[in-house]
Amino acid sequence: MRKWKFAGSIMLVFLLSGVCHASEKEYEIAITKGIYRIETGKYQEAIRNLRKALEIKPGDKNAMISLGMAYSRAGEYDNAKLVLQEALKIDPGNKRAEYELGVVLYKLGEVAHAESYFTGIWKSDADEPLKKAATSYLEIAASSRKAGKKPFSLGLLTGGQYDTNTILEPSNPSTDRGKEKDWRAIVALDADWTFLKSGSLTCDTRYLFYQSFHIHNTGYNLHQHNLSLSGRYDFTPDLNLGLTYGLSYSLAGGDLYSSINSIALDAEDAFYKSSTTGLHYGHEFKKYFDSNTFLSNSIRSGDNDAIGIFHKVGLNDKVSLTV
Image: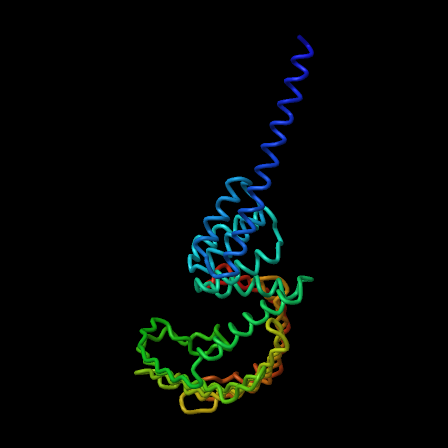
């Protein structure tokens, strides 16, 4: 009796081994056909073959990445996105899956998210052909942004405001001169011109004119000119250096109020995917002038330095958080 049980067990092992061998062979045939169909442009057939491979081996990362590629090539980007995201859950950091998902996100218009994957590949030790392909998409995205920005823009803003307590002496608020109620109208003109775009170098100039009018407190009518000149050089797709010079010239009530010169240096680098870290340094040369309205304004004159580090994280394609 025991001999029969032993013989039956051996037979069962052989049967299971045969089934597993047959399944492995069917999987290899299905995935090979799927990849071949992708290469020959028969994407729907590839999808059927690769889905069959996944039925045989659920959760197989190679079959999932290939299926994502087939969906992507067929223009079924939503399906491709879901499959490739699932593949990355199974094998986090797979550069091929990240690249293919980046392509899909780019096609779906999620450019910032796509760039985060391409940047990660560009900085990694991935194969050179894959890094080159990712860099090409980064260059295309950068060119699209530059092409999308108009070389010249002009804006006009007008408005009104009712002040229930006009501050008469900002530099000496303890002075008791009573509360002043007044209407104020404002006009602002904003012009921006990108006058140079050559390779990695971009130069802009901006002019802002601001004028306010009070009905009674005319000594507080502000007349201001702001001019800035900036340049930015992109050393790599995610590393850039910017330099800005600014001049602000103001009159209050027709009297000279202030003259401010400033210079700022900014450096930014995307160290990891959708996050950017930057260093800022700025210096201001401030000159304030006394008048009948602003009696002690000149004591505010002097230089001012500012230095800081900021970190920006892209939450999605349209929203970011800066600290």
